[in-house]
Image 1 (tube, one colour):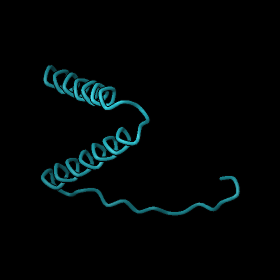
Image 2 (cartoon, helix red, strand yellow; image 1 turned 120 degrees about the horizontal axis):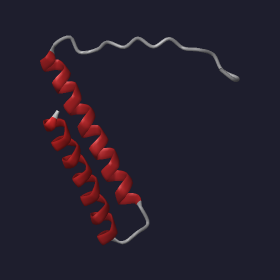
Image 3 (cartoon, one colour; image 1 turned 120 degrees about the vertical axis):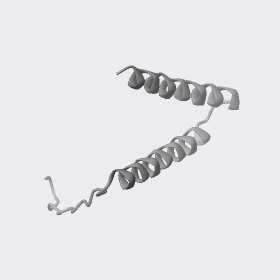
Length: 70
């Protein structure tokens, strides 16, 4: 690492499927809020922002449908 020192990080993963599902939901909510805030700050018309959100939602739905096919 250039100019810095290594740090040790300890990660504790969820121990049960229920806790993993809760963790996954919290991560998804965080990501969604981050994307919404990012889009809100964009310097473009509201209509363009809404089209972007619709495109994101469609991409997610398409991905969910592909997962169901597997």
